[in-house]
Image 1 (cartoon, helix red, strand yellow):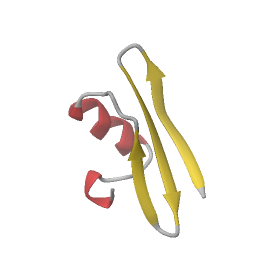
Image 2 (cartoon, helix red, strand yellow):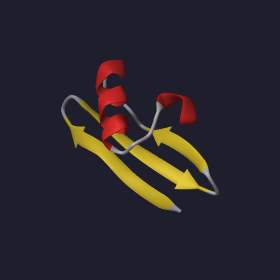
Image 3 (tube, rainbow, N blue to C red):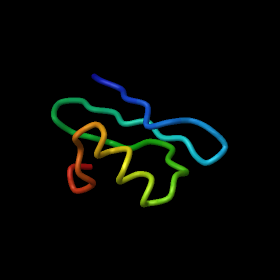
Image 4 (spheres, rainbow, N blue to C red):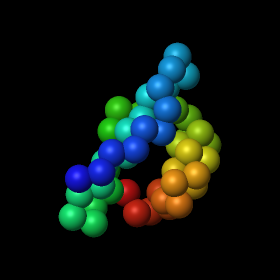
Length: 49
C-alpha cells in the first residue's frame, strides 16, 4: 500500500492511496483544476482513479 499527499491546508486536503493497482483519492477539498494539477505531478490521470 502506498500513500501520497496531494496537499493539506485551508484550500483543501487530499491523499492518494494505491493498493493492488487500484488508486483511490481520499478527503479532497481542492477544486477540480487543483486536483488535476496535483495528480499530474505524480504522473496520475483522473481516469485512473
